[in-house]
Each structure stands twice: as structure tokens, then as C-alpha cells.
Image 1 (cartoon, rainbow, N blue to C red):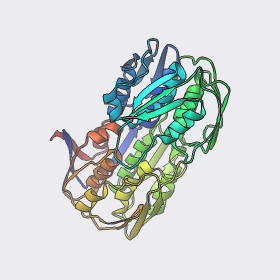
Image 2: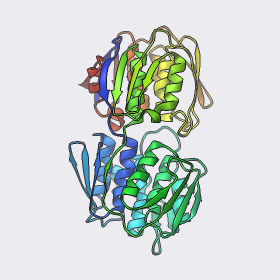
Image 3: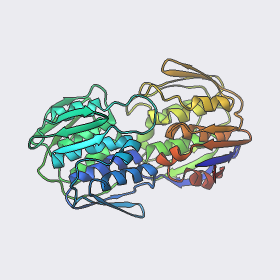
Image 4: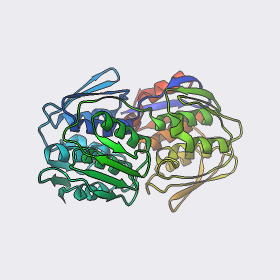
Length: 418
């Protein structure tokens, strides 16, 4: 296992380009199962999760080849309805193959997936929605087994919560369903919009993406697609907070600024200077951070995937900040590491209260998951002395070459074998 070794106290300065969004790439890879022939996805980050999803697809008879930042996905020989056990158990997003397999082959068998242990993330919304499209589904012995008699049928579906994954899975399944499907209380996230744009290029008729009501008119066959994935708003947000926590000044290019509006509002309230254009953001951290109140909400609210990072930032604000988590009940796994570094944090029901300290101290901590590991890395950049982050395989699932990017901006961070 590798670890990060960080010497803190170096302000970040410079310019970077943001990678493509992992959380868009994974559902789009699953979406390629619906298409005939070879589809190409551009701007795909090189991540462990992308490799794992590639292994899932290859286990179904699909050929996946990477050329630089482009994935070629050939579904000509898609023939297996049962997903390979080992990669599925490593990746939560592997659930997204359920809808495409049902729609394309009429049969799917997928084990219950794995991923970060940040709380209950049940697949019941996926299953309920697919049943409303006409699928017969049973969950036994850790497997989801689904069948259809003929084609899936369009239906009106209401999601109890605007789940990103359930919205994407049902959009994919509905693309080959007969008739019209309405998804009410759908997620309006940028990643869902990107999936909709991909499906439109494949020939599906879709309206309402980006709102809470999405209309899909199914077609008999999807064409192969050449599609460029949107920039990763979570990577961008993490780098922006890294600049602020180190009192630095950076510019990010090839981003979608409008995807980060809720983050910008909170960071400006804390005293950061942010200049946002359409595809570029310039951010400057100040010497005095103000306390903040944050509540995670479905998009366009504050993203749960940026909560650990802004919690780390709030540890250095002058005053008491309150961070409330409404999406995942176990998303404060980074708190023990921050406390070990000297943060004053009290954990309550679904929220933390942090009283800002003058400085954090470098020590040895372990990344608990992708975003929690990012939060501890940011804390290490700002801390006095040396910080070691163990368990960075979690970070490799969600950030491509994070230490390389931070080093280009002037951070003293290295990856070493643990």
C-alpha cells in the first residue's frame, strides 16, 4: 500500500486543467451496453473505479480499450447477463448495469455492490422503478436477479428521494422501453444531464433533464455514440478548497463554473475571493477564515461529496462552524483524523460542530474513504510539520494523480510505498 507524505505550510499557486467527471463516466460506461457497435467516451479520467467498471463490462463480453483519455467500448459481443462478482463487489456504480442489461437482454443477475462505507445506500429505488417498467426482480443470497417478458414498458415513476443513481439507471432502462417513461422527483445533477445528452446522441428522445421531471420516449435500437464527458465538479471543488486552506491562489481551466455555485456561495461567505467565468475559475484564499453553516442537499444544493473537504477548511475558521449532513448518515469518517491533527470537533446527530483552531499539526492518519481521504490531505497541506496519509488507495478511486496535481501547484507532497 502507498501513502502520502506531506510537509505542510506551502501556499498553492498556479494553473491546472480539471479532469473528466468520474461520476458521469461510470453511468455512461454502463449506458454503452445499450448501444450497437463501438462507442467512444472522451475525457475519461484514469482511476481505479474506471478500471473496475471496465472489468465489469468485459465480464459481460464487452471489449473495452483505452487510448489516452478516450475509452472505446465495443458491445458487438455482449452476451452475458450475469456480472462478474469480484469487480461488482468493489464498486457501488456497478448497479447501473442492471437497467441496460434488462433493456438489452431481458435478463440481469448482479450481486449487491460495494464501494465506500459512508452509510446506507440501498438499491430499492432502482428495483422499485425497474419493476414499474415491467421487470420481475428478486433479491436472494446477495444477488439481484431480474427478468422481463418481452420489452420493458414505459411508466410513470416517482422517486421518494432524488437519487442520482436511480435516476440514471431508470433513464438507461427506459431508453429501450416501449412508450413513454416519466421520472418524477428525478435528480437534476449535471451527471444526470450528461447521461441524457449521451442518450440523445444515441437516438433517444428525452426532455426535462436538469429538472425534477424527465420524460423519455424509448426507441427500438440505440446507435453507437462519440461523447465527451463533463468536467469533474468534485475534483474542481477539492482543488479550490485546497487553495483556500493553504492561503494560496490558483486558476482552474476546463471546468463548468455553474456546477459549483453552491460551493462558491459558502466559500465567499468564509472570505475567499472567487472569480468565475464559464470555463475558468480563479480563487484566492485569505488570512482570516470566517465560520460557516453548511447543509448538504441534492443538487443544486451543497454536495455531500464536498462536505468532508469544507469541514477540514472550517477547522481553521475563526469561530464555530456547523456542518449538517442530510444525504449519508456515516459521512463523518474523516473526523477522527482531523481531531488527531488538533481540530476541535463535536459530532452530533447528522451534524458536526467545529470550533476553529489557529493551526493543525501534522501526524499519521488513515484515509477512511475517497472524500474523507481528500479532507485529510487538505488538512495536511495546511498543517504544521509532516503528515502521513495512509490508505490512499481510496483516493486513487476518485482522484487521478492527486499528489501530482498538488505538486504542480507547489505543495510538498510525495507518494511513497508504505
